[in-house]
Amino acid sequence: MDHQQHFETSGADDRTRQFLQLLGQHEQALVSYIFLLVPSWSDAEDIAQEVRVRLWDQFDEYDPDRDFGAWSRTIARYLVMAWRKKESRRGLVVMSPEFLDAIESHFDPMVTSRSDRGRALEYCLDRISEASRKLLLDWYAGTQKVREVAASHGKSYDAARKAVLRTRKALAKCVARQLEGGSGQ
Image 1 (cartoon, rainbow, N blue to C red):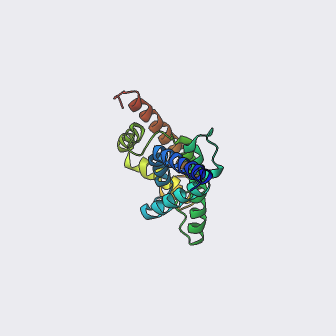
Image 2 (cartoon, one colour; image 1 turned 90 degrees about the horizontal axis):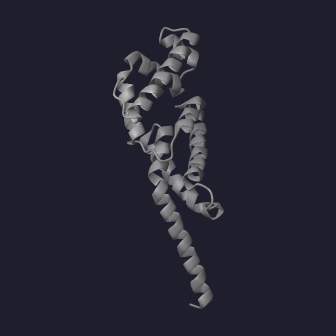
Image 3 (tube, helix red, strand yellow; image 1 turned 120 degrees about the vertical axis):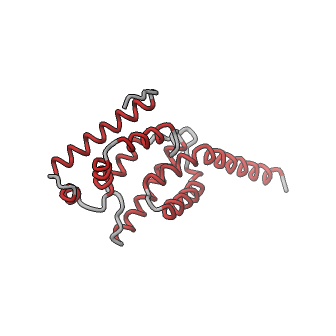
């Protein structure tokens, strides 16, 4: 092997090593993000694998000055949206766009599914009424129109919307208290 071939191989090895290092640093958060967006475990795993392949295929386009986690989540979001579009054709829309936006807006790339924030949210969800939790989950599930969800809970659309907003605010306050170390729920 001549010197030029060795240099090119070494550069490719460095690029591969860089990719694997970045993926290793961000993979747990990336996979958690996908699992938040895709309720089916097997579909989420398939999408996660597809994201890994796509990240490698597009790694030459990655700008090292950008946040790898944000770049990888952008690719994941596009693949999740493609999956949702395919599922909606089969009549299996699982989440509304609003739910996806809510997940996206609250996603912290350094937080994993069993993080402090995740544990705090689980704690707080356990403390709201069953009716409030069911309404919130039905509202964001996207399997019915929100007016149908309201009716199925015996509420007008406005009353259901206000109840969802109150529950979200209560959960946000509860999570904030938990993260601050407070225990007075």
